Length: 187
Image (tube, rainbow, N blue to C red):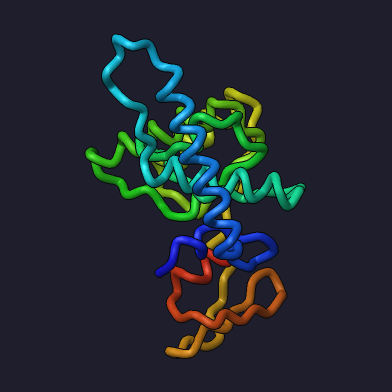
């Protein structure tokens, strides 16, 4: 509900003062880029909201000297993180549907893996998506880990949460839904 929730350090949203500082820095950088354009170039550089938010996050991570940074992104054309160097690892949280129109999503993920990611952690996938992801990971020497959905045992499922077992360990989530157990395994 608030922009600050999108950038967290140690689980806490950055302060309002930091948000203003980093957004101002991005605004100033955009102004410098537009000043440096050739006089004949009438098209101004105007970053998207996603690009601005990513820059704010990177500035915050740098200012706080974060050693590990998690950037939630998407594999589609709206994802500004595609301009960053490849991350060490990438997580595929959801399963990719098995419909012809969604094959493009599978191939976008394939191209993302080919960027140089060294490890993929994925939710269980359908046969076609799994084969494409596994073959791509193998071709570029990328380790692939898939959550073993069949090893989950739901112990209790209520509106207040979900208790489940996985490989002999007990887990409790404060959110309900069988699909949340798969999300927890991927995490």
